[in-house]
Image (cartoon, rainbow, N blue to C red; front, side):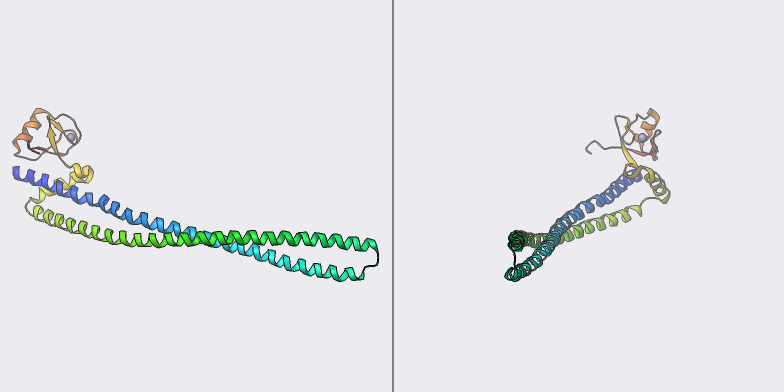
Length: 237
Ligand SMILES: [Zn+2]
């Protein structure tokens, strides 16, 4: 029986190592996700800037249209001025002309201001596009690294599966079934050492009879408190 206990200890260690691959793989994949996120956020910035430029251009063309209307109005006023008869009419036309000219000035200023904004945003897009390119290169690099790391992990895992199946072949079926039953609720702590006469699964002290049985190792002993399989840890471990 002693050999089965040590085989169960080994099996539990292999099972734990196999389970540890989950978080390892997640960690590696996380790197790629982070790089993808960075890339995406730059793409979003560019998209947003493009939308803002479109909006800016739209405002600009509205002002240009307004400018066109105002110059038509000015021409109209000029035409009318040639035909005025009274001082009052002339004054009224002059006032209209002044207002139109002021509006033209304002529209011109507004167009210049908007042009400036559009240009600045174009420059921003350029720098973001450079960053995007860098980020894409970085992503590809990480993608290659991740692929390789995952492959290495897969190879290691494959080896462990191999070891496990070889080990399982040596252990009697009913012992395996018993182990798996405990593993279902205890996970990777299905087989635990006894230290200072205490179960290292639930950390409760075990009675002398159980302890003696663990030391003898002639049968598979479980913790009377939690039910985990107990073994005596060798000194050098
Ligand atoms: Zn216990």
